[in-house]
Length: 237
Ligand SMILES: Nc1ncnc2c1ncn2[C@@H]1O[C@H](COP(=O)(O)OP(=O)(O)OP(=O)(O)O)[C@@H](O)[C@H]1O
Image 1 (cartoon, rainbow, N blue to C red):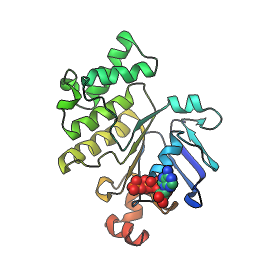
Image 2 (cartoon, helix red, strand yellow; image 1 turned 180 degrees about the vertical axis):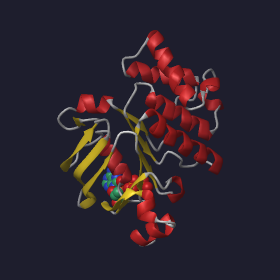
Image 3 (cartoon, rainbow, N blue to C red; image 1 turned 45 degrees about the horizontal axis):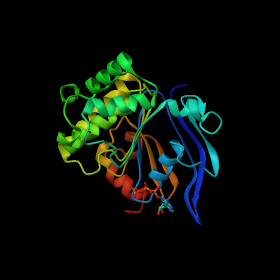
Image 4 (cartoon, rainbow, N blue to C red; image 1 turned 60 degrees about the vertical axis):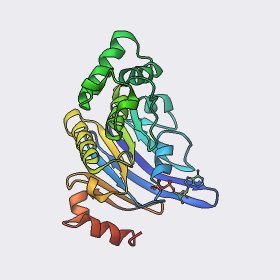
């Protein structure tokens, strides 16, 4: 199974419960939006999924590998795009990706081929030789998504990847990542607080104050008015 399962995850920051028995699963090739207002616990969950820290209770299974019992195998199967950009602006786009490939043990022609394919997939092939500093915000994000694909993960985790981008760049990235799920079979978890990034056929998990308030197909949860439903669920927060 190439999907993602989060099973009764609980995490405390001191006396504050940031995640309270959070459970949901995403099947291979599904785009799942993790929708929650500020403070819902999205970044805390991403920290647990990437093993920056470990949960107080519960289990995370990535592409069939239990993250606690088999972290190396589980982490090798994820690609991550963090909320804050992590790009070396002085390097070319290609160099940024090759550097990352090397961290995954990929070198030489194999690395070059993977980098070229990933950039092509994100519509960035013609920018490969440019310094990252020359790219606009939307293209820098696309480059980071391409970079997250270089080692061939089956699960792609993105933490509010459109923050700070204009409407056109946001729409392009939302579209690209939906296609990665639909056409390449990637399992996608996309954290956001923006309802308009969610499509009716997406899987949706609504997180609020560390709890899952709704999980299922977005169209079933929101009907014709997902914004209204989201605000009703989260108390307009
Ligand atoms: N490192 C930390 N130490 C202490 N408390 C934290 C830490 N990180 C998050 N929290 C708290 O945990 C709760 C969940 O925060 P988290 O950042 O995970 O939410 P979020 O949904 O990602 O919000 P945002 O959209 O603002 O990033 C909040 O109450 C927050 O103050």
